[in-house]
Length: 459
Ligand SMILES: *Cc1c(COP(=O)(O)O)cnc(C)c1O
Image (tube, rainbow, N blue to C red):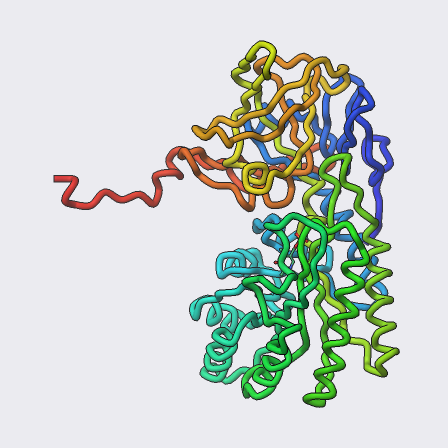
């Protein structure tokens, strides 16, 4: 696994600047001499010609480089395991990529589990999360021979013990713990504080009691504990603190039950740079810091060092994704605002409407032209909230221009929907001057595929 590669003469991994010195570009994205945005060595306008618009473009080399940074940080040193949180962006091709980079997979539903299985992903490298797994999902996981189930609550623990017993297997489990850590991030993506739908609460004593219960389950093999303190976190100290709190908890378990945890899973949540306001750390620093924190805590408490597991989602794929749209109608309200409508919107990227998320964008076909006007990018849904970017500086915008919204690799395709019966765009992986479709564009036929007209209405 080699880190860094050269593409088109640009040292890979360095962020390139757009022609006018404005926004940063990630991965292999660059502006060529003709002023065209290129991703993976292909002009964005060419990708739209070939695969249609709107289009999700994933920079394969960038995803692999992110995987490799995690592998180098956590796995190569022997400290632990990296499992990709597939909910950020999941397709069968992505499962193959993750497998080839030596990472594991975290799934949160029967659908994600089934996708991994269909892609031939090794089931012993899969962790299954979720706060309300059904019997059907648990049975599927057991029948597939899943690596580990992260038990979220007592209702699940009892049913899983029974289902495993019926199959004569002892299933490896982690317990999901809510450590009560309040980190500085958006409320909707904050999952570590006490008031959460996820996991067993640590500060109230519920978590320790749950470990007692899991140890008493004949068909569950208690590996250790898990926590996930939130998402889009920039302060490395939050992860360090989580490691300390969880190791303290492990110490408490040793005193109480005489058990040692073999695995400490600290979840995901590492932040990425969506806009210039975001300032993420390096994965290497993140790895060094948490590995050291766990080692120090173990030493201090005279405990064996558990295997460390992390579950990055966003930081593997977000910066590798670019959504290409075609500009359609433009409406100017003199002295108020200029609306530029694109051929997608909240259906392919619900995050601005859902979380108020901020994105940057450029005109792919005018990438070296200076900014001339401030516009607001809106989608095509019948919904006033269908806004993608407010007050964006761009060169003079015309209908037919290709707008490239950057950093859309995580929680965009994964959260896409068919509101207004708009089909999902195709997803294309680009690499070394070539694009390959990994998810086909949804057609109008796809949209009516599951519709049925009751016989009484056919008469
Ligand atoms: C969402 C989630 C992740 C991934 O979070 P990112 O912010 O995308 O890194 C990891 N683990 C669990 C349990 C999650 O719910």
